[in-house]
Image (tube, rainbow, N blue to C red; front, side, top):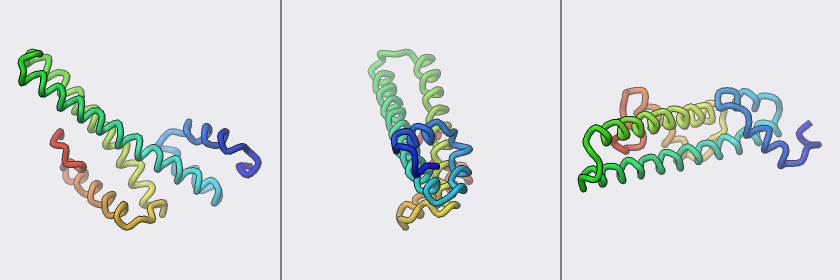
Length: 134
């Protein structure tokens, strides 16, 4: 089926599949596996970018608080919201990474090591990315 569809349509189909179902779709055949792998890597990188953006927002918020541009209550509320957001994004990212690892989609040894370390840190309640926002 996929060999008859234009690549753009296939990419749009895979982009709409939720994270929880994405890896299961890779079981169809080799072509689906390759497309799922590509989409999973794309999502992994998107999560990393979003986590970095939120982390920058946290740092900027801290600078505003230090300069007394915002009050303590506002700082705490917004900071907690950002921390919960980073934790959620990290959970989603690690879910994708773990599924990729378990299904043989990660071939680079350094990426494999990074995933195993991050999963271990998360299991033990640590901060997988060392951002200090747990």
